[in-house]
Every structure is written in C-alpha cells, then in structure tokens.
Length: 242
View 1 (cartoon, rainbow, N blue to C red):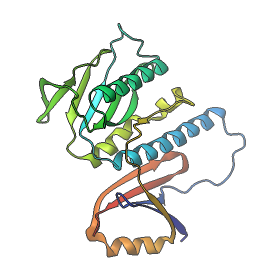
View 2 (tube, rainbow, N blue to C red):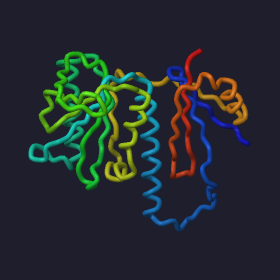
View 3 (cartoon, one colour):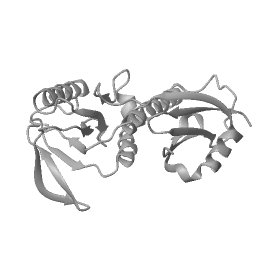
C-alpha cells in the first residue's frame, strides 16, 4: 500500500480518494505519435477543468440552471471569443441592473457539429431578474425564459438538488471542447462564488478506509471522476457535519 494525499474541504467535507483503474504501462514510449500526445493533453486539460469547476460549483447553493442559445442570423455562434465576451458583458449588466449579489458559473457546450456553441449557467441570488413562465414543464418543473436575453433563446429551471446539478454541469467540459479552445477559458465564475477551504493531509490508505468505516453514518454524497489519461479514478465523498 502507499500513502495517499487526503484533501479535506471545510465547507462540504468532501474527501477525494484516488484509485488505479488498470495497470499503467510505466514504459516511456519516446516514439509516441504526436496525435496521441495531443489526445492525452486534451484529456488532462478536461480533467483539470472538471475538477476545479466541480469544486467551485459544489461549494455554493444554486437557484436556477440556465441555457443560453444563439440565433445564427444575429450572431456568429461559431466565434468562441465573440460569444464569451457577449455573455460575460450581459451577465455583468444583469448584475448591475437587476441582481447586485448575483452568483454564477458559466460553461460553454460545443455542438455535435464541432463548430457552434451555446452556454449553460448555474445562478443564485437572482434579485429582480425577470423569469417568464414559458408554459412548458419538464418532469413536472416549470421552464422559464429570461426576458432580456437578445442574442437568441433562453431556458431556466429551478434547481432542486445543488449537489446533482454541480455534477451535471461538468459533463459539458469534454476533450473535443478542450481541443478547440486551447489556451482559452472554459468556465467563468463570479467573484462572489464561495470557494472550498481545503486542508491537505497525507495518510496511509488503510487509515482512510478505517475512517470511512467508522463514519459510514455521515456519508451524504459520492461522485467518481474517471481520468482516462492516467488510468485513475478520483472518488469524492461528501460527509455531513456531526
């Protein structure tokens, strides 16, 4: 067995455990193809972004899950830099005019065509933002529209479970997205988003197992993130405060 770094969040008591999925070939293949190296780089980049995105989103309580789409007759929905600037400025204006305490996390989604984008957001502290009942329900939940989005169409639904939606929003960070947004931001979090306070320990793996066995009654939520590029899985375990 080996020593395992244990990261403890004071806010959510989230414990990540790292375990091997498959035996990793330790040989260095100096003749590895460039395309294979690129693929691995995209996987690592996606995994890093997913981890950070999840940690921030999970540290907050959210009110709405929002989707922003773009009318291609009004704006070039393939221009990533243009779209991110438009959404960023729109959110800034929304905060100034309607919701001074607005919290948000914003992520892009690459369409299946590999060219165009739309965006998703988690928002909270919505103040006087106008949510218009669309008259449509999904799984019994009302779908709203945001009235002053001028670039296309919006949908918004109330968040029932912040833990689940924090996990759900990470699925949009894909290898394909990372490959076409190299050296660019892939998520935006407002400055007033809570960040996890992290303490790091180095413990033998056996002690972590014993700790979990002794506190099984405190387990509240688990999530496994597979990191294909290095053959590992990280298991996040959230525990209730005693």
